Image (cartoon, rainbow, N blue to C red; front, side):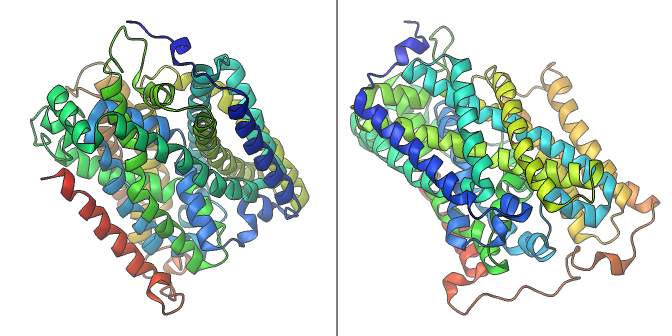
Length: 551
């Protein structure tokens, strides 16, 4: 049987629309309320650095809990099985802990307003401008992913045409970010976090009950897809075939190290939330507070993808009309009654708007502060940059509407997102980590390392992988390899260029290279306020989470 978007339509009624309308009213109300606190560009771009850790921590995880998580990870669960948990327990938690313990003292302590601004201080204007342009482009592309995912849901569930859904959703996000700046985005992300859970937890529980509980799910999938489909590490030996198309080495190095650390430590859409915290202690706790709910997110995101595969076996198969991206909409169509449908649709819309708002708010900060203020119109009054930020927000949203159609060409949007991360975030991480730990790294090395790493990832993906020169069976496997190539090329180029160019004086690197600044003071004596116990506790729990899926 061939399905279409029409077959995914849900019988929404007046109650569901009331729930949706109520949520939208609250979101706009938060934007209006937040506007009162926006008086300077610092208020607009970084919330005046005044927010408590629990707010920024929940916003940190909610900013990532957008299309990447909801549709993308459910699609990954349906396509790759339990291998998807690697994106959380090895592909997120260690990097979030590293950001808190090692990198936040550099970011927050140097009082930078963005990730590229740190590169300006460490390597100079050439690296700063290049990284700003790269980040602005990637932010718009990723914002488009969230818009496309939102349009997919609205078209499939409510019958809205894709183009109309993209425009309406984009304008709504534009309204509340323009009103209240980052504060509006962050407070809405906290609200959206709880709305998302209110949608996904019942969907997962009802789905598990329909397939006979965890035992019934495992029996059905192992009979259809094999034991390795339900194992985190089964079949990942070098030379073994598996659904992910990757082995343990590319998973550990490609995803667990370069791609994960590249995303979580240099992606300003995430780092911006920590930089808005009220002090260094709160900034360091921000990713650690986010790490604990992140450990459990697979239960309500990956699990629905597995359930959808049992309830709709044609998912992702040629000729079925259903892509892996449809896993969540299929469950909503088949499992939820009215009222609960309204909550679920609201949760999905909240997730997509959180993801888009995170990227748009980081885009307006980088473009206004790191490109416009630094190179185009320097030295203007603060009110000018505040007004510019609002205009740039609109431009970012409209650009995201355009890039949403690029994302629509991928049957699994997570594949698309990971491709972008390997192009843009991994080379940036290589430059950051080498510059932070090696005083000899020069300004020229930072620029050429970033440029060569980005180019190498693109060559590997578009020329070697897409043309079949290297035998990698899946997009995700290719992305892991692209990440390793990008990091390796950037590191080698930085090493060579640094050895033939003049380094900066040691006095100019104070606070920018590890060991040149005072160690951060621990915030209080209670263990749950100290970053080190929180961080190592999260890593230990992540390791323990693997146990049930590795026996």
